[in-house]
Image 1 (cartoon, rainbow, N blue to C red):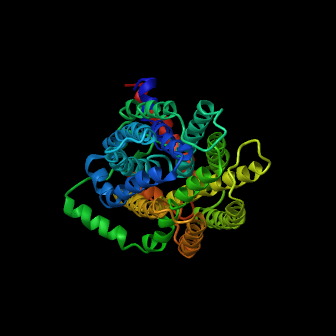
Image 2: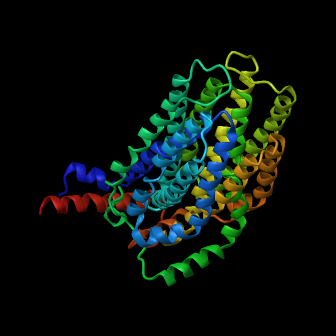
Image 3: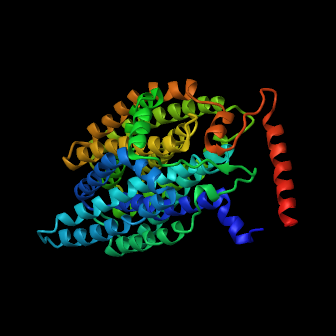
Length: 469
């Protein structure tokens, strides 16, 4: 019988927790770094355009790489490029402040390393959370990943606020802020190295994870072509373009209208309230077994669409008010309450959209290799949306027009999202069959409770037989 530490390591939620930890340390600190930002958003927008441009290209091959080397090595490689980005951006920002020249390639180099790592990290994270846990735990697995990622960003916002609390004017954050974020980013790699192979994982119901077997690059390209030809991918593509588009506008809006300490506080609220608290509730509801998976999908996409639409309407009102007044808002100003409410809502819909779309990808009944390819493509299309958005910011398109680009992209994405949410989701049994080794379909008369009872009896007998060896 395996030791207790080994049992813990081979449990699905150990791997899910490690994925969440990497999300805390890497994209979490990345988000805090961007939300805190520079005095001018131009440098950040240029660097982020490169990051997401690399992710756009990489997304079309990251699924193949993941299927070739496995999710463990893909996750490990995904932890390597974030810290150099933060360190190089800090160095360049300091040089910019002192009017030095000839070092503009620093942020580009850091952005390339970050983009390469990010696309691998996100592909591995999605492939793990949508395949490794039990079927009725995958909504919570996805939500946990985004909760920790956004909690990391909120902690980063608190760090930034503490280090810049006396900066009641517009400007850049201190170098200590950058180096603190860089240090946290370095903590992801050690724990990522400890996750087991999917074939070693044992779910609590006794089942084993079906692991994709790599045969040849030709087969992987055929598999990628199949995913690209799916009606679900075609219909979800506009939403995949949108769901990472919004951050450029939100971060630039924060930097444009607020002092350094106000930006840090807004960053904390953005990531803490909606994503870190409400996000877990969303994951729990998406896993609620009392409702069929298609019913959960219909409620999920409909509620998200309504809340997001109302939020963007409120955002239009606030944007035009702030644009007309042209003031810099501090935490002591009464109007700051309006900024807080809007940024909390922005954080809610930004996170909720990510959770919904990843959960939908895992609810299409795809086998693990196709899940990896779909997640990689989702990151690629999402990266394209982010690249276009950050390019708009880098060329100084007005915030009013950046806002309308978000609203138009969101409205264009709704028909496909709602159609797949209402008509494209399969039952739990089909998903379990596609991602479980040796799974046999239950009879039509068997209920979910009967299935769990049978698995419990099997697990009990298996443990008893082990104890007699």
